[in-house]
Image 1 (spheres, each protein chain N blue to C red):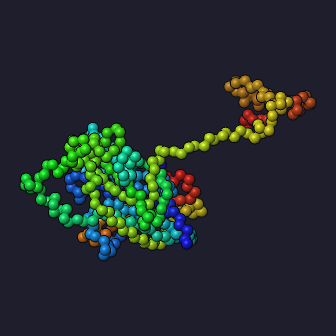
Image 2: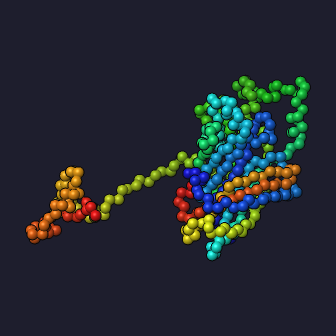
Length: 216
Length: 171
């Protein structure tokens, strides 16, 4: 029995066809690329659709990605179609359950529609006019990328030394007072303790001498 | 996450495609969607080039050519052919709605063909910056397939080469 390794890259090009008028003309293409579980869908409007957008600048045209069923839950994603050449009409999604044997067991079917939509999204019935449509089967399931799982609470790990030192006042560090003067670094370099006071500057008596602000 | 920002090291030369339909499949009217899944089986670096062996699976879905429907739409014509009420459907609440808005029934049956082809290519090392940290991956640059005479598929496929080495966020 061979071990099936899920392919890391999947590419699909879908041609959208108009629902009315000349059925032969392709009214746009959708490119779907999936790499290691994350996917991206780009819609390139065709000639007739671009002319439609130019002629009707006030119309809100959207691309809907739906499951192949009716009802309010069918819609998975929605992208607004703009007529600019800089802005790609794209949508990102996650995939799950890639199934190579899907050819026999059944692919996951989706519909991609271009429709003039009201604010509420696509429900398949009144108020929306479908301009172009495509249906495709994919061996994996599509989920909107915006749906995030629960994030684990990240605990900020403090310095381990801080934990081992208890709150005993004998072990608490005493921070030396350092005034915020502009050339405080210069002061620290220039005013150094001299070695004549031999006993005074031993480590035990002195507060923390760690040169944490050493200039070099 | 934009795949266009991934730097493609190298664009492979176009691969011409031509497929015959098996006999038990109906004629093609329109191609609906094309899927390509490339798989790299193994690769190795030699002194002057990178050798890649693998295969790609192509799946083409199309609508079958339905000659009877075409002849009906060409009639147009007289009053008998123009049935105003056929475009409306009676809803349960007694109102008529224009069922032309819902275009689902315009799509026909999708037929799917799968083809698998092997490839074995060599890429000159000048296109690859650091061979030690390079794991080749193939992405599709361009794919075009047109049906010819309803029974043949002709097209071309262009692959691009990317580096898959330790990629945590794929785009």
